[in-house]
Amino acid sequence: MAGLLLVALAAARARVLPQPRVMASFARARAPIRGMVPPAGAMPASGGDNLYRKFGITEDADYDEIVAAYERLCSKNAGDKKELIRLEVAKDRILEDRLRRRMSGALQSKVVESSWDRAQRLKKRRPFNEYLPPYVRKFFEKPDEKFAINLGIFFALVSGAALLLPAMASTGMSLAFLVANGVIYNKGLPEKQEDTGRRTELKPLLSTLGITTILGGLGFSLGVLLAGLLFPDGSLQATGLIGALTVAGLGFATLFFKVQDV
Image 1 (cartoon, rainbow, N blue to C red):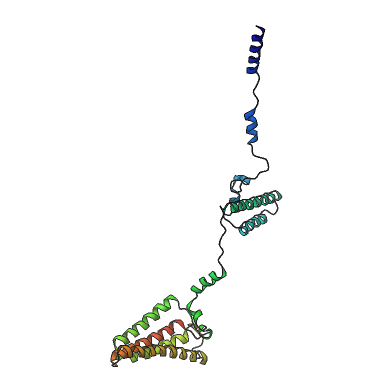
Image 2: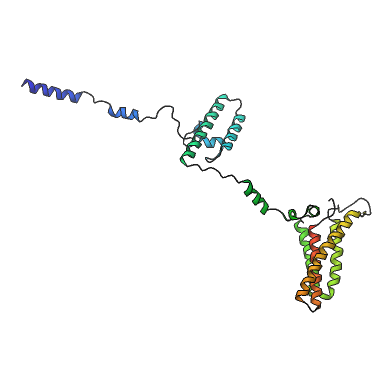
């Protein structure tokens, strides 16, 4: 009887006494260790903003962009020591996050264009005048749109008239030669002058005659070559073709060449 009484007392005592705090200890074990720094992209900066947003950069910004943003903010907050400390910490955390993502493969390095690729890209965009010899390049000038349209229409009409009306080819060539010399010589000169007359300078005049003679002669030579192939009988169509290509050569000279201020 006494033994049964002792067993009952022991059971009652076991129900009354508190159990060990296993779950509390387990919860404390899972608490974050003080001093560990979460990733910069997930860590709020002062004011709850993202560190990258605070620096005004994207998460794929490179080292130079991060440092430039840091220096810009430091110069902006030069008198606030606490803010400078926060900026230093934020910069370090961003760099740590960038290194972590680089090691994990989440951040790909930016491919910088090589010097050879850049040279090839610029080579494709080289303007036409860069292919000319230096002594010719200084006379070359890209025309503006209005000038090109007006002169292009004129020379196209004269060239077409020479081609369709071979008997007028010589007249068209003479007219184109006069217009080409006048436009090229006066291109770049002021429209109004105080004196009543304009003094003709010898060097620009000789340069003008040389340009029109060379390019007009090239058009004439090409016309003779094509006329010999297309019209071997020497018909009027051959004369019209020669005149049309001569006018075209003079038109090209008028559009793209100058002699003043070279």
